[in-house]
Length: 372
Image (cartoon, rainbow, N blue to C red):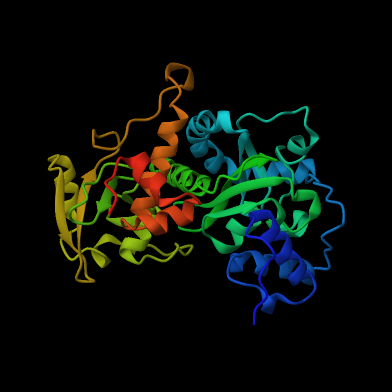
């Protein structure tokens, strides 16, 4: 029979799981620990790393950093307004935001970093290497490996030195569909907040959309399923050139249309996706026809809004400078995250509550929902 930890306490369960894995007894684990965590621990062990060894948090050379900064410029520029708003959202909970490239090198930092605390200073530096090979299991290495949002608390990190951190992470994909980096929210010896996984995922989505819309294009298609009106960051976004070739898409659009990441030198045409005249998309934008329903070759139908660059639409306006906006109350930020969790769970309150680490009663109360 699988062994069970001596206590239901979260930290005790993590410590129990560590003992089993590092003793080579991962088969005795119960299901309380996410499988990707044990996979990362085992990769660290296979690299010859030991949980007790000191972590140096080394930075790459200045020459390497110049190359990284140049390659990451579009990502960093797209992330700036999102990170400014994110920093305001997390200022009261002692977390800060880290942006890395696809190799785990820090390219930007935002939020309330206590520079007098060495534990914050060593990781919140542009140029520091936070890859799995350098610092073991973290939300950064996990998000870049698993390509999905993650939450990591204290002892779920591989090294003992990093067991003081709690962090949420989400990958960030470029207009070409490839992972370009990740966004991380980190706290030090602070309260566990698994709901931050939803906030970091939503923020990563905003960065992806901002980046896509900043690239050269002749037409933007905002996509959603029938019954859902296009108009926010949950939309699929597709950009076309003047000849109807697809030049970029956000991850939502790629999932809707079953698009693979772009291959260098090869482009897909809109006529290969939409079972209607691609020229009509440009006509609809010029006439400002609003939302229309289009058939796909897959047999499905999508709600679509075609827009030319600079054309007025239902897209959220660009955020004003932080000094011009009153901070959003923390309770409203929490409510937004709970609402998104319920949406992600397709209305299943129990599933949403489990993913957030809160009770169903709290979900009902925060959202003003009648208990069923």
